[in-house]
Amino acid sequence: MSTVFPSGSSEIWGEVLGKTWGPPLSDFAQRILLLGSGELGREVAIEAMRLGLEVTAADAYAHAPAMQIAHRSYVIDMLDGSKVRWLVEQVKPQLIVPEVEAIATDMLLDLEQEGWRVIPTARATQLTMNRAGIRRLAAETLGLKTSPYRFATTVDEYHQAIAALGFPCVVKPVMSSSGKGQSTVYQQTDVASAWDYAHSGGRGRANRVIIEGFVEFETEITLLTVRAQDGTFFCPPIGHRQVGGDYQESWQPCALHPETLRQAQAIAQKVTEALGGWGIFGVELFIAGEPQQPQTVYFSEVSPRPHDTGMVTMVSQNMSEFELHVRAIAGLPVGEICLIQPGASAVILAPGSSENPQFSGVAKALQVPTSRLRLFGKPRCHQNRRLGVALALGDTVEEARARATRCAKQVQIIL
Figure 1 (cartoon, rainbow, N blue to C red):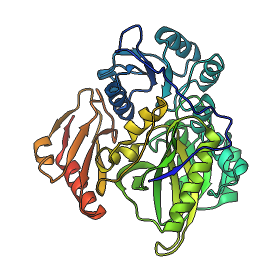
Figure 2 (cartoon, rainbow, N blue to C red; figure 1 turned 60 degrees about the vertical axis):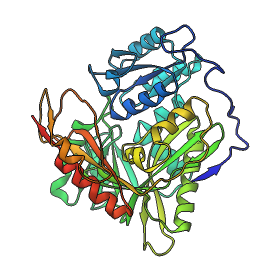
Figure 3 (spheres, rainbow, N blue to C red; figure 1 turned 90 degrees about the vertical axis):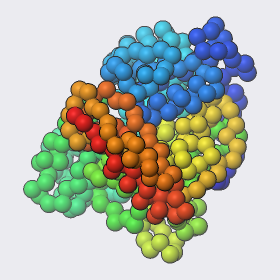
């Protein structure tokens, strides 16, 4: 764990919520509004409730994971700014907490200017929910090392970008999550299908894509970075494996050369300071070069909220990323972040579509030593939708990964 204390910032580092608060649903309750109610929002809601906060959960569909436990819930189109405003005025939250990409961020900017508190800030939410904004901030404003990139709105611009960057390259929607719409283009015959997939997998109403030159990297990490009233903190780095841009497993710690870790923390601090606000940020970085010596660190992306790869922290740290997030956004101190033991997570994916998925094999899964399960309670599924995650500890990262994978494989989804 490392701590950097804020200095020279115009940001006011004081209390976010009131000095006192009453129980949920009372006149003196401190309320948070989750815009997005998936598995990450569910864990945020649980941690908020442990501190006695009132939670309202909103999403585009009914019975989303966080809605199942929240004090109140609403189904709205969060891309409709007028509906977002209506919801905020209805709930009157002390904290508006975006948890997904598909939100009318222009309305969040308006609400923040009127005095509502958006986590971490409305600007941070807008920049990071659009790959164009965050990539330009990182590469062009902050001067961070990134993969080469181009943006394209038309087919002609797309082909020009492919020609400039060459093969292989990665094509993504400017707005998406969990790898949706992302593909790697290895040859000319892949170009058209990658364009179509990027448009079908994007979130929101943006039709722009980003084309990235391929970076040969040794590993990809998430550096969870917490900005709180008592400083900036870094969790031990998390390694992860992705397929098609969607994470399959993660582990903590991911061993890095001390100088490489220093570089990674410097990049994470620079990005999160530029975004501002309080809370946890999932900073994704590419690590290139030989592991036994200082490596080159490339900035990839940042999420201004808990990160899916960070679910491993529910077993590996003294405080999970969700507890850290709630502490920070509530204006409470974070203190010391400690690694308990090497840990790992492995996802449980739906094998197909169903309006009523069911689970079997849970008892066998929990026979794996140190294992835990988190089944998200999603009411419906489609192919490869993440429905749960297996967690495990080990004396080594390798042992933890093997246990988490074995646990996940025991869970069968009945469609």
